[in-house]
Length: 425
Ligand code: SAH
Ligand code: SF4
Image (cartoon, rainbow, N blue to C red; front, side):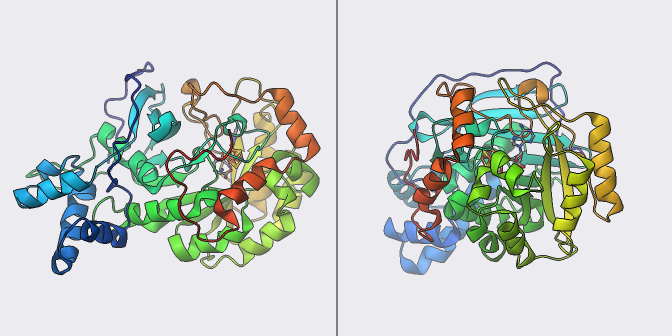
C-alpha cells in the first residue's frame, strides 16, 4: 500500500496564508461526541423524534465525507440545511504553513482561535502513516530537553482543534473518499500518536472526546489500538486513559534515578519513579498484546550508561513493555547533546538481552524541525531564555506542574478550557 507520500517534493515547500481571526461566534459542530452533537441539534430546533437520524446524517457528512458546508449535505432538506447554517459552524484549524522534509515528513503549522499556533506532523513509513498531533499550545511542563517546554504561552486545545488536526491533514493528503469512486483500501493516516506539543493528560476531557470522534467506526474510524497517547507521567490520570479512551500508552521515562528524572522531567518531583511504576503496573489494559511503550531520550553522559540500562530493566521488571530509544533531537540553545551511536546501540543491546524490544527511533523530519521534541510554533516569539529554564529546573519550581493542576487536572472532570483561555502567559 502507499502510505501517502506520493506528492512529497524533495525540497521544503512553504504555503503561507494571511493572518485572520478564527471563529464567528456560532457553536462549532466539529469535535462533539455523538451524544453532544445530538443534544446540540435538538437545542437548535431538531425534533426529538428525528434527533438520532439527524445526528447520524450530520456525522457522516462531517467525518466520512469531510464536507465543510451545510449546503453540501444533500440528503437533508433545504430548510434543515438552512437551520443548521443559521445555528452552527464547521470550523477547522487553518493551515498557516506546510513544510515537507527530504524524507517525506510533513509539518503543518496550524492557526487556531485566538491566533495561537500548534504543529502537527505526518510521518509516512513503509506500510503505515503516522500523524503526530498536539494537545496543547506549548506545554506547562518544562522538561529540560524539550523545545516545546520552552514556549511561554500555553493553552489547552479544544476537542474540535484536536480532531481538526486529523481532518486538515486528511485534506492535505487527499484522503477523503470521493462520492461514486470505489472505496480506497490504502489509508494515508493509519496511526495517530498524541506526541506533539503539550501534555495530553493535562487536557484529558478534550483529548478523550476528540479520540472518541477519531475512533468512531463510521467516519475517521481509527481503531483504539492505532492510537498512542504519550504522557510525561501524570499519575492520577493514567488509569482513565485505559478506561475512558482505551488507546495504547507511552510514558516519557527518560531516567532511572529520581535525581536525574527530577531534572529531565520535572513532574517527577510530584510523582516519582516508584509512584509512576505502581500506576503502570495497575494499568487496566496491560497485557502482552498491549504493552506500554517506555520512551527514553538518549542524552550524552546524562542517562545513557550501561548502569542506566541495567537499572531500567530492573525497574520495569514484570511490566509488559517495549523500550523506545529516542536519539536526542537538538534545537537551538538546547543544553544537551545526542549520545553517540555506539552508546545507543550498547544501551539497546542490554535492554534487548533482558527480553524487551528496544527499537531506536529514527529521527524524522530533522531538516524542518519536525522531530520529537523540536516542535514549537515558529512564529511564537515569546520564549524562555536558557537562564530561565535552568533557574526553573534548579530551583525545583513547580510552576508548570501547578499550572497544569489549575487547568483542571485535580479538579476531576472539569469543563473544557474555553477557547482562547491562556493557562500561563
Ligand atoms: N508531553 C508528552 C508528549 C509529547 S513529547 C510527553 O512528554 O510524553 C513526545 C516524546 O518526545 C516524549 O517522550 C518526549 O519526552 C520526547 N522528546 C521531547 N523532546 C525531545 C528531544 N529534543 N529529542 C528527542 N525526544 C524528545
Ligand atoms: Fe511537555 Fe512532553 Fe515536552 Fe515535557 S516532553 S515539556 S511534557 S511536551
